Image 1 (cartoon, one colour):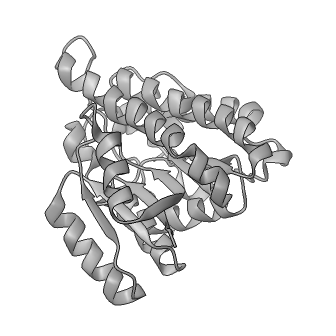
Image 2 (cartoon, rainbow, N blue to C red; image 1 turned 180 degrees about the vertical axis):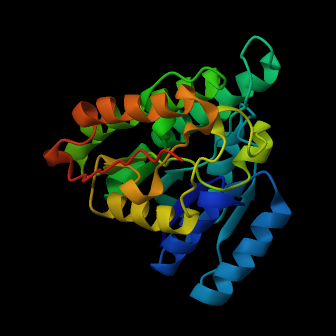
Length: 276
């Protein structure tokens, strides 16, 4: 008999690691995907000890064009089919687009857009068969343009739009599709992006706890919600960097009021602007 698994990308750190713990803790056998094999093995050992099921580890760089083929081949070799897809992998770069390395910015598109789209569609037949779901990790960055992280913000706008469209297409087939839109979370994302704390417009931004964030967002998927967004106590901004700090949050409030927070979406979003 073919075993069903939950596929989680970007599982070696941050929100991906917490989501892996949550799904494994709820009895799912997880297939963990990330670039760093050593980190995956450490997490797999932890989950096996805690949950008594050995995760599948797939060391794979999603920037590679054949990444989806490698993941599918590894799952087939293990005799597994996908019940849930969690597209968590992603990264960004701080700086002006014309100044940053062009190849690196194209890799953002490879991971945040191409790989996410590939895995969402590649396993669609299996998701329909198992009446499973898709959890795509977007960002509040997906609701407004982002000078200083132009490609990253644009990539997350794609994630939000694609996920919401796919939700409507797959709902009649019994598949739940949710987009997770966290605010700033203290993970390795900042270091890879070239972010330095206490500088620029992002100074003194409060951070969500990634474990709490992951718990809340996985619950949204189980309930079949369209979007999962941060609550009031987890979003804030500081006036230290000037008006640039406040404007993205104001834009998000205006946009989310009509696009995401209608009562039918079962989202109760309360945002607070904290002027430090």
